[in-house]
Amino acid sequence: MMLTGIWEQPIDPSGRLNLPPALHSLLADGLVVTRGFDACLQVFPQDAWRTLAGRVSALPLGGTAERNLRRMLFTAASTLHDEGDASVCLPQRLCVYAGITDHAVIVGMDTYLEIWASERWAALSSEITDDARSWSNAAIGLGGSAI
Image 1 (tube, helix red, strand yellow):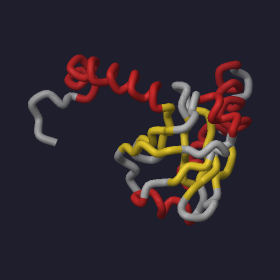
Image 2: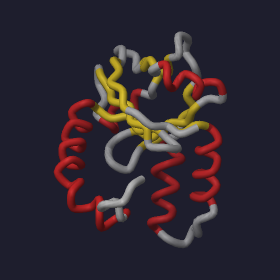
Image 3: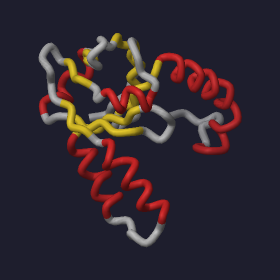
């Protein structure tokens, strides 16, 4: 399943987040949430999580960066279950990490989702728009070609 799109959703004081209808099918097998790399949360369907976990676990233990990546992803990971009405309860410690309070922005990233504090997403979205002209041609060769 390709995860694309963007949604702004309210979060209740207990961390309960209603998933938009386009994402309801993800709840059947469960989801895993963990810290993201940019002060957001990353949410993975179980299959994508197992693939990522396998790749990270295969990294050598001798390097500090590799061990820290394992610590970042695995110590914060929690399984999300359907709380009813297609909602999940985000762990409080992860909401604090990402600065998420009463609203969140859910962003589809193809194989996983990111959940952002609304203010942080607005700032990043502006930065992305400002940078788009410079990286579109250089990074992935989109200039002038039909997709």
